[in-house]
Length: 198
Image 1 (cartoon, rainbow, N blue to C red):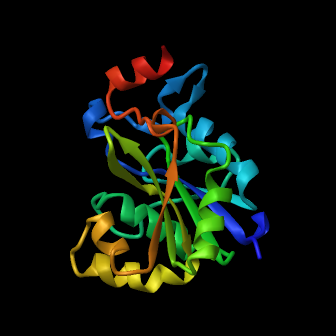
Image 2: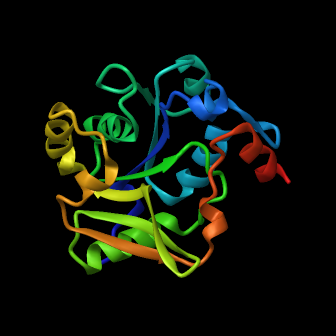
Image 3: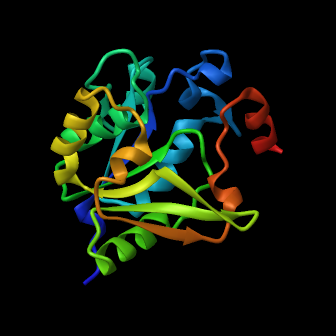
């Protein structure tokens, strides 16, 4: 039994400090005429039922992209897990799929393949992975997870923990191998953004 698109809410994570981009709001950086986060939103929305954005600054600019915007439920930008928690707390479907705002070329079948593996392995979380120089590289913010994990994540963050992999290791997680490593390239710096545009 495959998951239906309607059972999955999509989340674009755009709540970071952008420290490696000189403090710029990464999701609003221009990429081929559109903000980076909008590229992610447009790419993810056909793969899911509904969409949300996690952002902590320039809320109106993100709201203009046409999806509800939720800030971190914890202060001081504690990292992507806080963004995931914002998504889980406002998720009205059984599953949440997340992508970062700075990787506009992720696979168009990302959610479908994550959902298939999640169902097959009876897992709580499905995580995208690629092979880079023969080594498995996980991309934990490209994931599909059960919305029921909100409480577990809330407790983890309140313990002062921040590491995505550490929290995911507490649950049944399955890695899904994608062939195209370049699809997961993310623009962390202004230089990265320039090479993405080339």
